Image (cartoon, rainbow, N blue to C red; front, side, top):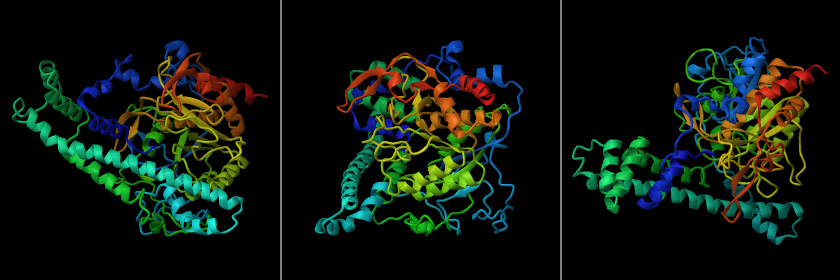
Length: 548
């Protein structure tokens, strides 16, 4: 989840020949730029766009109603809590006195005004990159392999051996993928001066423009070397790239090879806790923001949820009644620790959150039982949990798991308060499923818009993005909306309302099969509900249920 779409596109570009680049040309847009910024709030019946019908809900149902404040915990990266469009939308722990070094509310966390950062230490140093979970598994079990094999191993040991072997295979795949990406950036660095040289006759002062390059391409389209140089420079202009950017990407991958996939690097040296002891909770710090981290992910999630709807700037979130609690468990690379996830869920429950959003995931889980226990704790205390389905374009099932998951190793549901969300698009045709989105008739509950979503970005900026990371907070936002206006509803009831009230689309969508070929299957087969979430319908159903 943590690779920028631009990196994927451009790496592919620089690893291929000039003749392959027509696939990157943008398709004709069906809506204006302004309309695209809010398409996911529209209603299919009224607007022929498969949004969540939020505009209709506010116009016809909510109107001037006053709802209750609802705390939504965002388990994610650090959050730009000072963003202009989140003013007044960040949770404040009023029982804690800021910066006095005392745990005023006796919740076990000192000066936790807006949440907690599980990736830092008391000196202010923090984890920027984490190990991948497979590195942790190999580091833990590899030294024990010889002992396992020599002795008459029991079932538990056999399971550990199988996990180790799977982790080692996955590690090799990740390593090869990262090195391939690095080669793409190295090619870009090496080709930049060559491209400039080939274009020097036409641009002696290097004053390139898209229009001039397009005109030149029409004339020299059959010149493979020159046409490649033109296409190369066009992409650089379109994405505001230059040689220094390519070098930075190379350096970033060097860092990831050393940290994310490095066995000598252990991120817990920074937090100084015991990662194998869930009771060792004396770590972290209250600083939930950081201007220097390279991966600012929580801000896009929080904008979708709770960007101010009444300030006439930026975007509109789902509800102004939402207050965002920031719980930092995700770094700029690598995987989240199960311990951090479990403790963050418990923190959210204990400190008043009614909805928990988790727009992250991983394929392996070393201490999943801690997370399972935290899910049960949330269920016991009537807190809804919403998780993204992931962006690997795969079917979630018993063989391919996206953690955290609501299913035990035998495929049985663990709790009744967990919703897994896939990403849909604005097209009611074979493209309705986001091409990147995971899916699964048994493991994904519902879909929500997650393609070309306009949201808040770091440092008072805004941009479009894709991912199930956008879809999950739309569902979390609607859940909070229901809790705000109908506080008597339980987490389990809200989950059922969201699933039952979604919109059905009788359309076949494209999926990628195991052999790499494409096929069409009914959209209804991609999730348990077979639907796209609908705020208007959910509010209608909540109204009826709350009166029973």
